[in-house]
Length: 521
Image 1 (tube, rainbow, N blue to C red):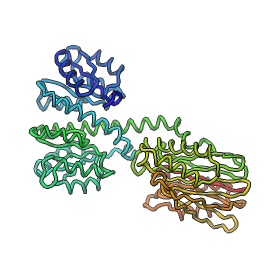
Image 2: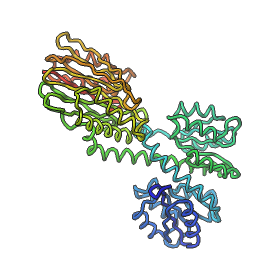
Image 3: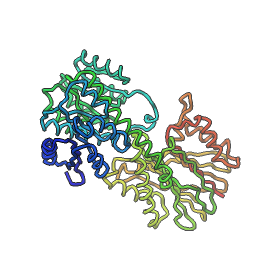
Image 4: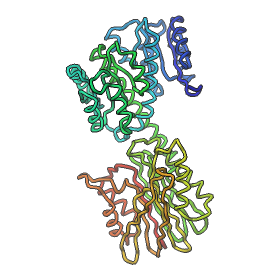
């Protein structure tokens, strides 16, 4: 673990012996440790340092640990900070009080230092999962107030029903499965917010079940908790190597199980909301980097675009125009596969990455060939290990106002549409190019179109084609073609397409909406 990767722990205890003991063992396990004898100094450390987890005594003179935790949680910056109480009080009531105060876990004095290390590792891992999973979940779910879904896998039917009853009573939607195979099927079907699994099960145990989930791209990031007995605590270390979020002791009782599950879900919910808030705040300043503020001016053509980010949040669609010389301009429309994964932060960052790569290639392009340009960008993306598992669709059109030719190539994109002003027909033009970043060779080829006076080209992303009306019917490419024909002679064709689409969907869009229209004069 490098210095930059080391996690920081704040120990708060008025007993210097306890502080030094815990500090010694944490330091030996590659943690950076800060100490505070009371609440005042602790607040200072939280504001001065980047703290990844807090270990706090309950009984202190200046301010008790429960009150301190409540005040820490009032600060938006610390609402999902892992917080562990260290206390001599170990009744179920005390544990419930610790959870209600905003704590994530509790360590009873006298403690086993190995137990401290286990809990620290568990909660830091949980925090890391929140940062990833909280953004991977589809943000549409962040706006809903539906109950969190829990999947409980345990071969002990009576115990599973008891926990299910208490979890449902607490407001969760809990499904149960009595073995790993059934649990995997339920997980794929319902996409739970949290999975709880017993370790000791016949045929496929909890560790094997966890490995099955990790092998599934859609399920691997779901927070995972082991349900175990006290005698199995040593096995938990193996569980952390499998990226589990936490563990719950069966002997703790239903109230503590519910309290711990509530803490996990509450922290996840806060992290989701924080993501939503940050994205809204960033939208205005960042959107300009992936979508131009205005339509470009280029002799011989009228180029317009309509872009509507999903829920007002910038996602994976991006638009760019690059004037290559007086006679050539590149028009670009891309869609990062962020909605499918729900990876909104990453989709947005990746869109900027691709847009930057395109601009570098366009600035040095010797040939005005979109297939050559796209292959160079693909090379850059494919060779970058950090983004090699992310794919994007891309449409690139190079317009020439002297020859009145449009050269087009695409990467896994939807067909562009060509409106022939002489015949009034709208033709789909499809490229055979592969998704950007999918393969070293993208099989990109130039398709040349004659742009006679009055002809149109339309570039779209799947947000328009796949959006549905209240009856579940897709707008579809055929309806888009008919809409183009219907309003071809109108003063503002793009405006009327927008109006028709908005009426069809009742403005309940399912993804980013992006459309570029190009008219030849």
